[in-house]
Length: 207
Image (cartoon, rainbow, N blue to C red):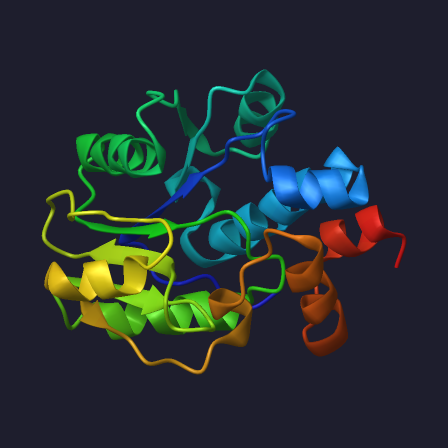
């Protein structure tokens, strides 16, 4: 395990869970275990970097809530107002504990490493708000803020451009595990061929 980052950051991870989560990936593999494993590997890396109690999981799915609580994470009910609303609710919960530096990390990065996430948070400390684009440069993997305020969020297709227009500083990091998200069979197979998947995803795939 790589060293835990010095205290100060909270990481918010929205986890939809249940039979409708990552429907494209679930449908192509017919296996919800892989979908859950991808999220759990993401959560584990966040916990290694900021500590389990500084990971805020936004979900209303009972199994995912129980998993997160057992791992020592803070859980927040999903307000059912879309992804941006879920992320904002998690950031607000982090702020309620006194946190000022908060990053929103989507829960679909099974090849994310502690080194990548720690380097991202350290680079982000120089900016009021920042984001990391996904591998193709159009989506967003992570948005962070050091101001103690909820950053403007605009996740979804084409979100990198929207986050840039909102004034968030793009971080051009060499972090393939962070920048490559897995939401369908093609993206999973690319990750299997080019990256080192986390242990839960490997186990779910029988690798």
